[in-house]
Length: 360
Image 1: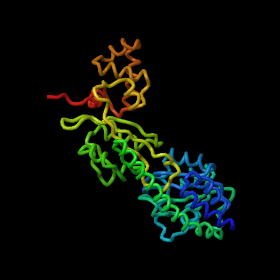
Image 2: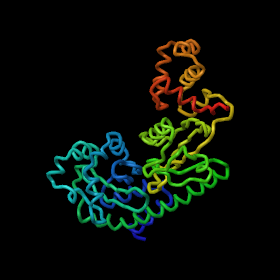
Image 3: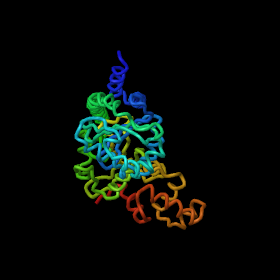
Image 4: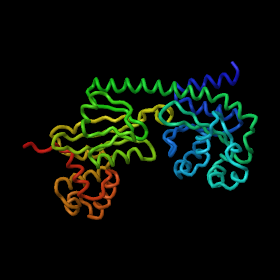
C-alpha cells in the first residue's frame, strides 16, 4: 500500500473512530509540508464543532477566543468558490491584499499560520465543513504543484463525512430507544438547539411547553428558554440543568442538557446535545443540593438562596449564615449570573416555579 493509500484508509478509519482525526490531520498537513491542520463545521456565521492536530490548537484557541470567524475573509471565499478543490492563499487574494488584510497581519502570521490551503465540504450534516491547513510565514506559500495532492483527498473526506454522520445517527437512535425503555423523556439536538430526534416519552412530556421551530427548540417559559440559550452559547459545551416552571395544567420540569460524548471530534454528527426531562422529586422542597445540581452553585450560594426562599431578606440570610449583608450580595451576584436572572424577585419567581401548583 502506498503512503497515499494509507492516508486514504486513515480518513475512512477516522470517520468510524473520530478520536483518530488529529493524527490523520497531521498526516494530511505533511502532504504539503505544513504543520497545522483543522477541520470545523460552520453554519456560515460561527464555528459549530471542530477538531485539529496538536500544533494547531494554540492558534485555534486564539481564533475562537477573539472571534476571528466573524472577521475571516478566507471563509467567505472558500465557501463560495465554485470548484470542488483545495485552494491556497494566492487563489483567494492578490499579493497586496495578503500583505494588508488584518486577518493575515493580526491573526494568521502571529500564530504561525501565514500560509495555508483550504476547502469546503457539504453533505455530512446540516452544516458545512471546512478543512484548513497552514504553515509559518518563513516557510513561504504552499507550492501550487502540491495542491493537487490535497485535492485528490477531497472526495474521500466528503465520503467520510457521510459515513460518520450515518454512524452517529444510528448510535443516537439507539441511545434514545434505551432511555425510552427506562421511561426517560429524551431528545437529540443540533449544536444550535435544533431538534434532531426525540423518543415518544419526550414528545408526550414536552406537550405544549416546547415548540419545534426551524432555528431551535423554544420553551414557552421565557426564563427556561433564556437559560437554554445561554447554555448553547457558552464558549465550551459543558451542558447544564435548569427548571421549567409549573403551570395551571402542567407540573414543573427539570431540563438536563448534556453534550453528546465525543462532540469535539465527531465532527460530522448532526446531533450534539442530549436533552432529558425529569420531574422534581415529588413533595420535596427546593434544597441546597438541588440548587447545586441545577445551577452549579457553591454550598455558600445555595444556602443563601434557600434562606431567601424561606422568606428571609438579605439581612436575615446574612444572620442565618453567619456572614455580612455584603457577602450575601456578593453570592447573589454570582447566583444571578448562573441562573440567568437579574434580581431577587426574578430569582425567586424562577425557583418557586419548581413547585407544583396548589390543588384546588
